[in-house]
View 1: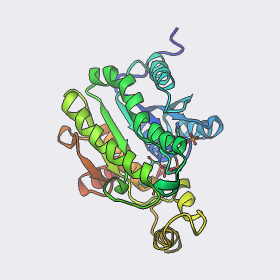
View 2 (view 1 turned 180 degrees about the vertical axis):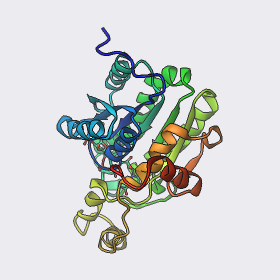
View 3 (view 1 turned 45 degrees about the vertical axis):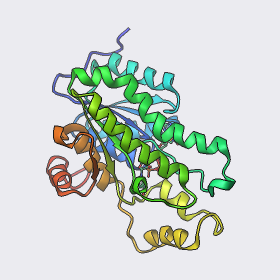
View 4 (view 1 turned 180 degrees about the horizontal axis):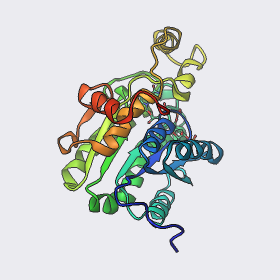
Length: 271
Ligand SMILES: NC(=O)c1ccc[n+]([C@@H]2O[C@H](COP(=O)([O-])OP(=O)(O)OC[C@H]3O[C@@H](n4cnc5c(N)ncnc54)[C@H](OP(=O)(O)O)[C@@H]3O)[C@@H](O)[C@H]2O)c1
């Protein structure tokens, strides 16, 4: 049974995964600022509720769905709840991701390696599989959050690099199949979130010395982006990405994205 009336026709409806913190929470806030209805997905309900409160304070309409994106049924239920509550889906942002295991291939726990792929690659597949029919009806958009690691052979993070490379290629195939939907991947840069903290707080033997020094220097030198900056580009792509971007792997700071995003959303959530 429908719990509330569908949102107004001109109000966009988006699903954002990994919305309990970091980049995903910031994407949800930007969408809230322009009055969007936003389904928030992650595993930590308390943190999701905090994001939901912020989205509402900014003018959006949140729907909290606690779910592990590696589970197809959980993704399908989140799509059903979104349709039940808001009546349609205009955008999906597949942002949930994990970097672990941090370990050389020869010493990695197979279950941990598999779970990384299940979250970072199969997670986006699950949600896209469940939402594509609804997205097609709206000529909607899918933004898959990838990483520069997709094109790098970084020692000790093989599952992460592999999952992001596969996500990029999966998105190209999706673009070939789904002509009614705009689907792309985006590189968010290096962002000041929990994921970077995990990397720089690893013990000194976990990865090659120069690699761990690089992650620590990013923080020490103030070179990490605040989540709101790449999130603003991602929120803009979710609402406005032109059809010619479909299938592409784009940079968050590409002028064709950064400039219109700034124009639409402004400098900060509250201004
Ligand atoms: N930070 C960077 O420098 C950087 C660089 C390149 C790419 N990225 C990408 O940006 C995206 C966001 O990362 P972040 O930096 O914001 O990291 P983060 O702070 O660790 O946030 C990750 C988010 O994903 C959620 N998540 C993890 N596993 C999940 C699962 N199985 N089901 C549902 N949600 C799950 C987490 O929530 P719960 O734990 O509550 O489930 C959290 O909300 C990731 O795809 C990452 O690969 C980040």
